[in-house]
Each structure stands twice: as C-alpha cells, then as structure tokens.
Length: 453
Image 1 (spheres, helix red, strand yellow):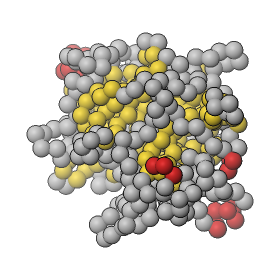
Image 2 (cartoon, one colour; image 1 turned 90 degrees about the horizontal axis):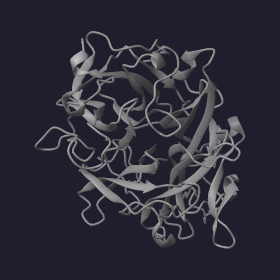
Image 3 (cartoon, one colour; image 1 turned 90 degrees about the vertical axis):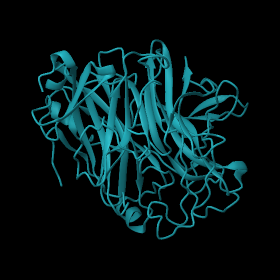
C-alpha cells in the first residue's frame, strides 16, 4: 500500500530512443533571469523501466560513477500477495529501496534502460514491530512502531576514502508518535554501500553510539537520523489513518498518507545540502522548501536544524541540484502545463547564481503563475510520456556522485547543450501505480543570445 502522499509529491511503449539536442517544434521557454533557454523535444523520451504488475517503481535517481558505470537507486514495492511470494519465494513487504548497476562503455544506449540486476536491497519487516521499517497490517496496533517499510531514497557519495568512498542513501520510514499507532510521520533513515548490492544501515549500538550494521531483512532496526541538536529528523505534521470515501481515490481506507522530507541531497562548495519540502509546523495550509546542511554524513547527529528557503504550495515535490557545468541551481517541481483542461507536467527553472537567498538566488524564484495558485507554470518542460492527462509523478534525474546534474554517456556527454536526463513515473487515472512505467527524457539549455530555436 502507498503510505505517502505522492500524486504531486514528489503533485504506449516507446522503447529506447536516440538522445540528442532539441529540435524545431520543441517546448521552449526562458529561465535563469532571462539569459537561458530551456527546450525539450517529445521525441527525446523513452521508457526507462516497466515494472511487472506485481511491483511499482518511481523516484529513480541514476548516478554516474565514472568509466561508463551507472547506478540506479529507486523506490519500489511488491504487492503483498500469495502470487508474488509463490513466484519469487521471498517477502519484500512495504515501501522498499531497489538498486542496480550497468556499464555503458560498450553500449551507451544502456544508460536509457534500468539495469538488469535492479533488485530489492532494503525492504520492510513483517516480524519486527520495534523497527521503523515495520510494515504494519493493522495500523492501530500499539506495538507497531513503523507502518510502511522504507523508501523515497536520495543517494550521494561520502568523503571517507580509505577503501573507496561509501555512497550514502537517505530514505524515509513512517513511524507513529510515541508508538501509539494513531499519529504517523515520515522519518529520515540512512544506509550506505560501496557496490549498490550490499547495504549497511545506521543503527544505535549497545552503548548508545551510532553503529553501521549489515542490512538484515526483517531484523533490521535503523536508527532515526538526528540533527546536531539531537532532534530526530521527522515531518512536521502527523497523519492519521484514512477512512476512505468516494472522493478519496488516492487515499483509500486504511492508508496512512504522510508527507514531508522528500527531496534531494547535493554536495557543493565543500558542504552537503539537503533540500526537502514539508508542511509548516503551525499552519497546515502552508508549506516550505527547507534546507539542512552538513560537512559529514558518515554518522549520526550531523545535519543542521532546518532553514526555510521559500514558501511553496502543499504536496509539491521539489528537487534541487547544481546545474551541469554552471554555477547555478536547477529546481525541478511538479506542476500543470494547463489547468483547463488539466495537463500534467514537470517544471524546471535555473537560478542566476548558486546563492540560497538574495537577488537571482534559489529563494528568489517564482515557481507558479498567479496570483491565485492553480498549479500552472510557464516553466513546464512539455513532457509527453503516456499523455498529458496522466500525472507525471516522483521525478528524479541523472546525477554525478555529488548529486548534481550531468549528461548521459555517449553523444549527449559531448554536447554542452544537453542539460541532463530526467526520470518520472506516469500515474494512471485509477491511481493503480503497480506496473506503471518509468520514463526518461532529456532537455537542452543554451544562452538566449546563442539560441537558434
């Protein structure tokens, strides 16, 4: 079951198409303070992964490791059914993390499809109610600490180098306040890996100190990630178990629809920046893009307390990364290309500099047209996927090891116009995400003075 609100969070088989620069007739607009032109051509899209009807996939971050090697880390879940267990012989309950590797040196086109070894690496527990990864069937069970497993991963390279740097994956669990089974929040958890096949999870050792322990399936009991003040990093507002109803297709009875902490982590100028959205702790009608910073992510108690970057509408997924080969931020967010009729899209803006606040900065961006918010933005990429009436959900993108934008291998890597490679999942109208395809798409970014579109 889906435990997190992700329709906006995060708001026909095309195969693998040859990538390249945008063509005449592409969707184009000006950003970056007026001196950059972004273009996306619907012909430069394809299906990245098509999960079976027994699985789902979204939040697909692709990571360039060098020498043509790519890793992918994504959110997944297996239907908890006798059929799945019969086919696989394994339980993979609740929200989960999948990962895999692919080498594109001999075939750059392999970058545009999910790795053959993409597999569950972290999943929920059916037997350990004291774990934040517990997958609770009865949401009112007072013994259930967790409710959904763990997902929505964000991965970045660490700075520990004795045997090669670890990659750290921050992901979310859902736990109840005080373990009472009535009010639930997203919580931040952490894992690490060197090979994207075997993961350790950050736990609390017997002496109370942080300890890295090999992920042990049902017995895993990750510690909550805490900031420098010792406070657990959890979403600001708690959610209750949904009662369902005719007007709640995306919130079925029994679901726990939490929000907050989903975003991206980057390493820029000697510092880790964790950008995420969450509701205001006092006014539930308001939400913000928050920033936490750290100089080290290899243990607990390292992230700073949160800082508000900007006010944003509730339930909008925003991911932030440094632009490819530019000292600018890029901001990806869920949006509408049109309100009547509704045409769903992903929007992209570039800042003028790498500042968080001030003129030309991240906080200076205006994400949506107005004055009344209706989800529409003139900075929509013009994604096609399965059609404009299908929600484009849980976007992520290809990053370098530091979480920032880079280009796919092959001809795209040689073309300075290529801004990067985006991924998203098409959410069908009936909200049945199992089996829904993950798409990829490229865009170009050029100086307005040099644009010839």
